[in-house]
Length: 489
Image (cartoon, rainbow, N blue to C red):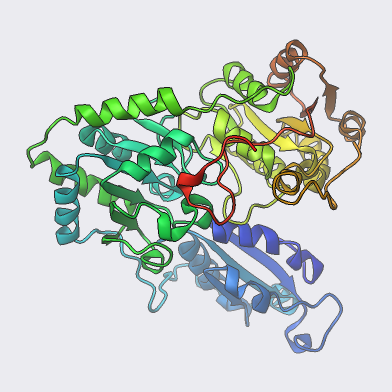
């Protein structure tokens, strides 16, 4: 909820983030009185015009009696089909108006009929392709979690003996310690996953939109494989990658149907393929070169050992996000929360507060960078006042690390607007808000700080100095194919 004008415009980045990552969200914004709209009144903003491209729908209330119907429609739209944000704009005079209210109205929207059920002929064709494949590969996205289809995904993968990888938004929908898990796919994916997906003869993609950060160069993305694409949003079919077999449906229903279809077919064990998956993971797994004791991969691996299995990790955006993606092993759905499509710096800390409110008995940790935490660190006020204790781990390289990495690797070390100078002092900043702040200088101190922080009843900020020269590898350079992944330069 936000007031008119600047309050409403301050929601735009969050709304766009939700739109890109298919997050159900309803935003209520104040607006000037109806007779002042369009006259540049004090704190007027055309928030409907601004957010129409980044919402599923927008409403502007014209009379108070419409509020029950509009609110019901907003929540219905946001949470059905492919989830996303909806905005309701409330002029001030409609907020003050009295009227007859009908709270029994239905949320019917003409022309809006999401399709949940897969077409049986498409399911039959997909089952034929999969059962006859020698090297099946499953690429899962955030849509698997939205549909609560993680169990079905695992069952299908084990039936097929298929290698499994996830997009960034899909991280956690398949246990990353499972023998069939090949690693993440994308610009900062696992080398073994990239190799295996290029060897696949049938690629089943579930609940993802083939983002450029996932596919790399489109022309060279799995050119030899037959591609099956399951997605609830028909607009995503053939938008980025031309597929051989589309299935427009809810991921859970489609995977269940596939499982039932495969049960009825003769199966053969893919011993050679499962051995190849194991071999690739052993031979191609990247071992990061250490940049001292407090190297981010080492820190993330240590953090995994310190946190309970069901801990919720959120991330900021930048190098910290990609180190977390690569090295924080995730076992359960909805335990890794990050900003994908929009790549919103400052996302992780407020997301951690939301996660803690939703799951107060779970450990919640935000893996942050110094640049990202500066963006929304003032929300420590909310954290302290509302008694929402989380742990923030700042991988502090005194840089906007990811941009600096690109400038270092591809622009001849011509650094521009990326050096932050070690400002602010995060320990003092945390203490100024009534939170706890600690700076660590060794792995032993890091371990002790994390153990104390996750038991604390107040938010703790752990400032960890790391090398400004450390890069995130593996990496697919911009414009290259996923097979062109590099591990050093």
